[in-house]
Length: 112
Image (tube, rainbow, N blue to C red; front, side, top):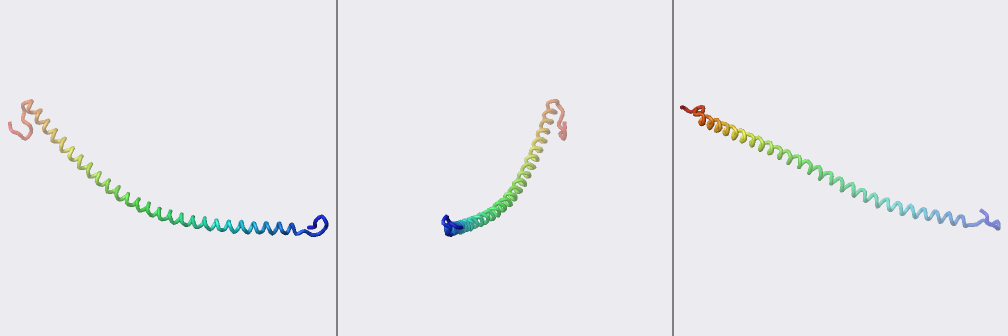
Protein backbone atom coordinates (compact mmCIF):
# COMPACT_ATOMS: atom_id res chain seq x y z
CA UNK A 1 0.00 0.00 0.00
CA UNK A 2 1.26 3.41 -0.82
CA UNK A 3 1.34 6.35 1.50
CA UNK A 4 0.26 9.88 0.56
CA UNK A 5 3.50 10.52 -1.14
CA UNK A 6 3.21 7.32 -3.17
CA UNK A 7 5.89 5.49 -1.24
CA UNK A 8 4.99 2.10 0.27
CA UNK A 9 4.52 2.21 4.03
CA UNK A 10 5.59 -0.41 6.46
CA UNK A 11 2.88 0.62 8.87
CA UNK A 12 0.47 -2.03 7.67
CA UNK A 13 3.16 -4.68 7.85
CA UNK A 14 4.03 -3.56 11.37
CA UNK A 15 0.38 -3.76 12.39
CA UNK A 16 0.10 -7.21 10.86
CA UNK A 17 3.20 -8.41 12.70
CA UNK A 18 1.93 -6.91 15.97
CA UNK A 19 -1.42 -8.66 15.56
CA UNK A 20 0.35 -11.93 14.73
CA UNK A 21 2.47 -11.57 17.89
CA UNK A 22 -0.63 -10.86 19.96
CA UNK A 23 -2.35 -13.89 18.49
CA UNK A 24 0.69 -16.04 19.25
CA UNK A 25 0.69 -14.81 22.88
CA UNK A 26 -3.04 -15.45 23.18
CA UNK A 27 -2.63 -18.95 21.77
CA UNK A 28 0.22 -19.69 24.16
CA UNK A 29 -1.74 -18.39 27.16
CA UNK A 30 -4.88 -20.20 26.07
CA UNK A 31 -2.99 -23.45 25.61
CA UNK A 32 -1.40 -23.06 29.03
CA UNK A 33 -4.81 -22.48 30.62
CA UNK A 34 -6.27 -25.42 28.75
CA UNK A 35 -3.46 -27.63 30.01
CA UNK A 36 -4.16 -26.48 33.58
CA UNK A 37 -7.88 -27.05 33.13
CA UNK A 38 -7.29 -30.51 31.69
CA UNK A 39 -5.04 -31.39 34.63
CA UNK A 40 -7.73 -30.25 37.08
CA UNK A 41 -10.39 -32.19 35.20
CA UNK A 42 -8.27 -35.34 35.38
CA UNK A 43 -7.94 -34.83 39.14
CA UNK A 44 -11.69 -34.39 39.45
CA UNK A 45 -12.31 -37.55 37.43
CA UNK A 46 -9.91 -39.47 39.70
CA UNK A 47 -11.61 -38.16 42.85
CA UNK A 48 -15.08 -38.91 41.51
CA UNK A 49 -14.03 -42.40 40.44
CA UNK A 50 -12.75 -43.12 43.95
CA UNK A 51 -15.89 -41.61 45.44
CA UNK A 52 -18.09 -43.86 43.32
CA UNK A 53 -16.15 -46.86 44.62
CA UNK A 54 -16.60 -45.74 48.22
CA UNK A 55 -20.32 -45.09 47.76
CA UNK A 56 -20.80 -48.46 46.06
CA UNK A 57 -19.00 -50.24 48.92
CA UNK A 58 -21.09 -48.38 51.50
CA UNK A 59 -24.23 -49.25 49.55
CA UNK A 60 -23.33 -52.92 49.64
CA UNK A 61 -22.58 -52.70 53.37
CA UNK A 62 -25.88 -50.92 53.97
CA UNK A 63 -27.72 -53.61 52.00
CA UNK A 64 -26.14 -56.34 54.12
CA UNK A 65 -26.91 -54.51 57.37
CA UNK A 66 -30.45 -53.78 56.23
CA UNK A 67 -30.97 -57.43 55.34
CA UNK A 68 -29.72 -58.50 58.78
CA UNK A 69 -31.94 -55.90 60.43
CA UNK A 70 -34.96 -57.09 58.47
CA UNK A 71 -34.20 -60.69 59.46
CA UNK A 72 -33.91 -59.72 63.13
CA UNK A 73 -37.03 -57.58 62.95
CA UNK A 74 -39.01 -60.38 61.34
CA UNK A 75 -37.78 -62.81 63.98
CA UNK A 76 -38.68 -60.39 66.80
CA UNK A 77 -42.15 -59.81 65.34
CA UNK A 78 -42.77 -63.54 65.04
CA UNK A 79 -41.56 -64.14 68.58
CA UNK A 80 -43.74 -61.30 69.85
CA UNK A 81 -46.79 -62.58 68.02
CA UNK A 82 -46.19 -66.10 69.29
CA UNK A 83 -45.84 -64.78 72.84
CA UNK A 84 -48.98 -62.63 72.41
CA UNK A 85 -50.93 -65.62 71.08
CA UNK A 86 -49.81 -67.77 74.00
CA UNK A 87 -50.72 -65.01 76.47
CA UNK A 88 -54.16 -64.45 74.89
CA UNK A 89 -54.83 -68.20 74.87
CA UNK A 90 -53.91 -68.39 78.55
CA UNK A 91 -56.14 -65.42 79.36
CA UNK A 92 -59.02 -66.99 77.45
CA UNK A 93 -58.61 -70.20 79.45
CA UNK A 94 -58.54 -68.28 82.73
CA UNK A 95 -61.56 -66.26 81.67
CA UNK A 96 -63.46 -69.40 80.73
CA UNK A 97 -62.50 -71.03 84.01
CA UNK A 98 -63.63 -67.96 85.99
CA UNK A 99 -66.94 -67.81 84.10
CA UNK A 100 -67.60 -71.47 84.79
CA UNK A 101 -66.75 -71.05 88.48
CA UNK A 102 -69.17 -68.19 88.73
CA UNK A 103 -71.85 -70.33 87.08
CA UNK A 104 -71.00 -73.26 89.29
CA UNK A 105 -69.88 -75.60 86.52
CA UNK A 106 -66.44 -77.10 86.56
CA UNK A 107 -64.07 -75.97 83.83
CA UNK A 108 -63.21 -78.54 81.16
CA UNK A 109 -60.74 -81.09 82.43
CA UNK A 110 -61.79 -80.74 86.10
CA UNK A 111 -64.10 -83.14 87.90
CA UNK A 112 -67.12 -81.85 89.73
